[in-house]
Image (tube, rainbow, N blue to C red):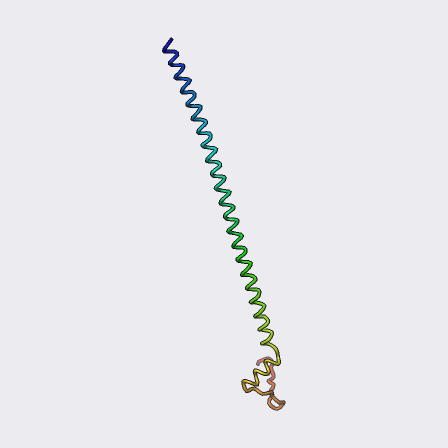
Length: 111
């Protein structure tokens, strides 16, 4: 009888230990899952912030390039102005041609 009580007490003790281990294992699994989800959430938030900074940098670069493009277009317009071209030609020593200085070459089919 004493041996049976000891066996029952031992079995109950082992059963409690198993239950405790299962509980700890369950909590450990929950903790690991929560940590993984948290790490993924943090990773996504970090990537979103990084992407946001990159977008802002690209927008600033786009604005800079648009300003530069507008400046270049204005310069091209200024440089193509006929009065400016005539003035520059005179600075280089060119003079307007008169009628006797102009020659026309006929262009036709070659034989």
